[in-house]
Length: 127
Image (cartoon, rainbow, N blue to C red):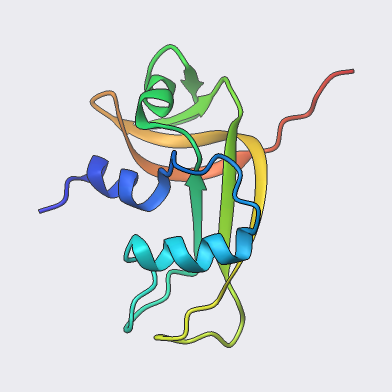
Protein backbone atom coordinates (compact mmCIF):
# COMPACT_ATOMS: atom_id res chain seq x y z
CA UNK A 1 0.00 0.00 0.00
CA UNK A 2 1.39 3.37 -1.10
CA UNK A 3 1.64 5.97 1.68
CA UNK A 4 0.44 9.55 1.11
CA UNK A 5 4.09 10.67 1.07
CA UNK A 6 5.03 8.00 -1.50
CA UNK A 7 2.04 9.02 -3.62
CA UNK A 8 3.18 12.66 -3.46
CA UNK A 9 6.65 11.64 -4.65
CA UNK A 10 5.23 9.54 -7.50
CA UNK A 11 2.79 12.21 -8.66
CA UNK A 12 4.83 15.36 -8.20
CA UNK A 13 8.60 14.88 -7.78
CA UNK A 14 11.04 14.42 -10.65
CA UNK A 15 14.59 15.56 -9.97
CA UNK A 16 16.00 13.87 -13.08
CA UNK A 17 15.33 16.69 -15.54
CA UNK A 18 15.41 20.23 -14.12
CA UNK A 19 14.18 21.87 -17.33
CA UNK A 20 12.80 19.50 -19.97
CA UNK A 21 13.39 21.04 -23.43
CA UNK A 22 10.06 19.77 -24.78
CA UNK A 23 7.40 20.13 -22.06
CA UNK A 24 4.66 18.46 -24.14
CA UNK A 25 6.76 15.37 -24.84
CA UNK A 26 7.90 15.31 -21.20
CA UNK A 27 4.29 15.42 -19.96
CA UNK A 28 3.09 12.66 -22.26
CA UNK A 29 6.00 10.45 -21.15
CA UNK A 30 5.95 11.17 -17.41
CA UNK A 31 2.17 11.04 -16.96
CA UNK A 32 2.24 7.48 -18.28
CA UNK A 33 5.41 6.46 -16.47
CA UNK A 34 3.97 7.63 -13.14
CA UNK A 35 0.58 5.91 -13.72
CA UNK A 36 -1.30 9.20 -13.98
CA UNK A 37 -2.42 8.44 -17.54
CA UNK A 38 -3.58 4.86 -18.01
CA UNK A 39 -5.79 2.83 -20.33
CA UNK A 40 -8.75 3.67 -18.06
CA UNK A 41 -8.11 7.18 -16.79
CA UNK A 42 -6.34 10.43 -17.70
CA UNK A 43 -5.55 12.78 -14.80
CA UNK A 44 -6.68 16.23 -15.95
CA UNK A 45 -3.96 18.39 -14.40
CA UNK A 46 -0.68 17.54 -12.70
CA UNK A 47 2.40 19.48 -11.62
CA UNK A 48 5.91 18.02 -11.49
CA UNK A 49 8.50 19.66 -9.24
CA UNK A 50 12.02 19.36 -10.67
CA UNK A 51 13.77 19.05 -7.32
CA UNK A 52 14.67 16.25 -4.96
CA UNK A 53 12.55 15.22 -1.99
CA UNK A 54 15.39 16.53 0.21
CA UNK A 55 14.92 19.98 -1.33
CA UNK A 56 11.12 19.95 -1.03
CA UNK A 57 10.73 18.54 2.51
CA UNK A 58 12.10 21.70 4.25
CA UNK A 59 8.97 23.55 3.04
CA UNK A 60 7.19 21.55 5.77
CA UNK A 61 9.50 23.25 8.30
CA UNK A 62 11.82 26.25 8.23
CA UNK A 63 11.71 26.50 4.41
CA UNK A 64 8.01 27.33 4.38
CA UNK A 65 5.44 29.53 6.05
CA UNK A 66 1.89 28.63 7.17
CA UNK A 67 -0.73 29.00 4.43
CA UNK A 68 -3.86 27.86 6.27
CA UNK A 69 -4.67 24.45 7.74
CA UNK A 70 -1.91 21.97 6.96
CA UNK A 71 -0.75 24.00 3.92
CA UNK A 72 2.71 25.55 3.65
CA UNK A 73 4.01 28.17 1.20
CA UNK A 74 7.62 27.67 0.14
CA UNK A 75 10.10 30.48 0.71
CA UNK A 76 12.03 29.46 -2.40
CA UNK A 77 10.84 29.12 -5.97
CA UNK A 78 11.02 25.67 -7.59
CA UNK A 79 11.32 24.69 -11.27
CA UNK A 80 7.96 23.21 -12.31
CA UNK A 81 6.28 21.60 -15.29
CA UNK A 82 2.48 21.69 -15.40
CA UNK A 83 0.83 18.99 -17.51
CA UNK A 84 -2.73 19.62 -18.70
CA UNK A 85 -4.96 17.18 -20.54
CA UNK A 86 -5.94 18.37 -24.01
CA UNK A 87 -9.64 18.73 -24.78
CA UNK A 88 -11.11 15.67 -26.46
CA UNK A 89 -8.34 13.37 -25.22
CA UNK A 90 -9.82 10.20 -23.74
CA UNK A 91 -8.20 7.02 -22.35
CA UNK A 92 -6.12 5.34 -23.52
CA UNK A 93 -5.14 8.27 -25.77
CA UNK A 94 -4.31 10.77 -23.04
CA UNK A 95 -2.62 13.74 -24.72
CA UNK A 96 -1.06 16.52 -22.65
CA UNK A 97 0.25 20.01 -23.15
CA UNK A 98 3.08 21.14 -20.91
CA UNK A 99 4.31 24.46 -19.57
CA UNK A 100 7.41 25.12 -17.50
CA UNK A 101 7.92 27.85 -14.94
CA UNK A 102 9.69 28.66 -11.71
CA UNK A 103 7.32 29.42 -8.84
CA UNK A 104 6.83 29.16 -5.12
CA UNK A 105 4.68 26.17 -4.20
CA UNK A 106 1.90 25.49 -1.71
CA UNK A 107 1.90 21.94 -0.35
CA UNK A 108 0.15 20.12 2.47
CA UNK A 109 2.35 18.52 5.13
CA UNK A 110 1.59 15.81 7.66
CA UNK A 111 4.16 14.91 10.33
CA UNK A 112 6.79 16.97 8.51
CA UNK A 113 6.30 15.24 5.15
CA UNK A 114 4.69 16.61 1.97
CA UNK A 115 1.49 14.72 1.12
CA UNK A 116 -0.39 16.98 -1.33
CA UNK A 117 0.42 19.58 -3.99
CA UNK A 118 -2.05 22.47 -3.73
CA UNK A 119 -0.89 25.14 -6.18
CA UNK A 120 1.94 27.30 -7.43
CA UNK A 121 2.33 30.97 -6.59
CA UNK A 122 3.85 33.24 -9.21
CA UNK A 123 6.71 35.21 -7.75
CA UNK A 124 6.71 38.94 -8.38
CA UNK A 125 10.29 40.16 -8.50
CA UNK A 126 11.02 43.56 -7.04
CA UNK A 127 13.39 45.46 -9.32
